[in-house]
Length: 179
Image (cartoon, rainbow, N blue to C red; front, side, top):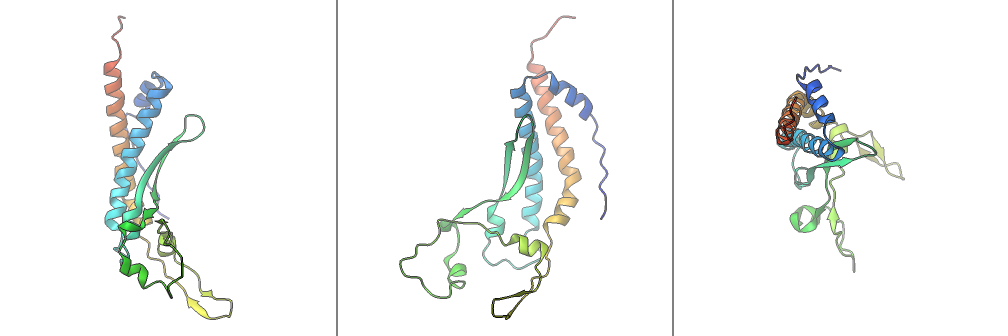
């Protein structure tokens, strides 16, 4: 597996400046910087979705989003997620062909989540039902891993740039002190 080597300049100085702020400012700067980095990754993933496999419903691409949240303590994380979607956003034809027979008194689910992206990205083993019938296998159609590896250096540079800009803005707003 290839290794990615990065050199980020100014991170040490930026970190030292951030420690001068109270927890609220540090968390806000971290959250916004991480979100900006993850949005850059998300844009690349969206542009590469449906390049290695055929689009059927459009749920995978339309459900992609970014979450940024705080864990215990000062740890802030950000990641790309597959969000649930309301059925009104989806075409009825694609789901009508999936249904085997109409169900009496059954309402459609309020939200759908394109969970099957994992099967497309990683592939599956051979499957068989309870009677031993072969259900085949899905070969890997990886698009997330290569896209992530390609965009990560630029996204980290963007993170450092946004964080430095925000720290500089916050420092400039601090009251001037006499030495």
